[in-house]
Length: 253
Length: 189
Image 1: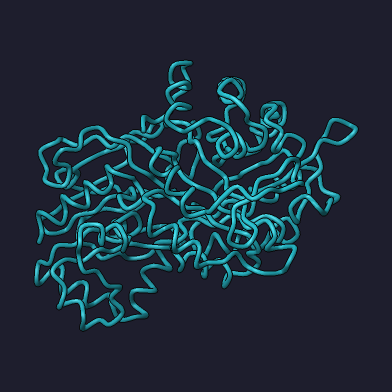
Image 2 (image 1 turned 135 degrees about the vertical axis):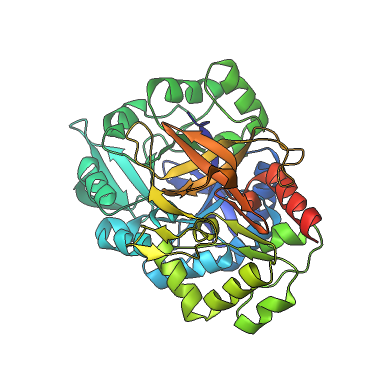
């Protein structure tokens, strides 16, 4: 067994770091470089950085920002936002990213995942999927930062993504994101058996108990944290101490 | 990678010219992509033969990281059967274990015999891994450290004389990773 990974997820708009609720009402919560250095020092397992405006505005994440962070941090950096070609991905890797994260463009075109995996190795390709519960209790997949509802069920998208050799999946509940009300454990229980690669849960963490419940009730490999870290009084060191105390295997930082 | 070495005030470059390799005291071979594309890339830039010459003939110290270490093997199967450098006899195969996730991504414990210079002051620490294939050397004397993942003992560090390789990413493994890089530099510079 390997330790559960605790991953701060940074949402960028250009060069600043933002946080919202249910993918809306974003407020500026800081400078990405200084924040990354803080969570590196606290011993988070890795950091995810996504420019949430990039796909909508048809541009790529600012790769110079990736370089700035990589030069100051000693942990793996997953970066994305607006990646729609091999060339875009290469720019992120050349800037120093260890993994890339893709969403809108691969939900539309899953073949791109296979091309990225063949070029860079599937272990470097993280696919992010944003979902929202529908009236029938199922989950719909949204793209372009939650602004575009696709006609796909989450099970179908996951099937395609896995078949095309994604190395990891990060699945975010739009309903829970930024609410500090806990993870949607039902979602991860439902999809876990469909995902043979590492699965990262994201959206809703607000206290220690939410993380304990997530790791006890579901078999996810990692969790993404946002508001709980950036707008509340929590840090990675204390989170891990708490998790270990509750029998969840976390790495001592 | 570069910033991790610069942390110890080393001068480090990305070598692009085959003839420049002889000017360096030590070499680091990192890798992006898969076994096949990486070996093709080295050949395309004419670095394959110069690396062979520096490492085998001139006995220059080299540290292979992740895919860079895997290329030391005779053969790899990622992206199709491909010849490696053959510096350390063995093959690179996929992790086959349905009780764990593949790729193996995350921090895992590296267990070494503790006596080797690379692991001086480092005992049973966690390093960052990110791979689906691993190195199976023929001669177990070349194995310096292993890492348990499911049913597999992944060879996480190999060494044969001047040739050293690690499956994990020391440059991404926070303070313990820096310590390993420091050990490598201290021994070889």
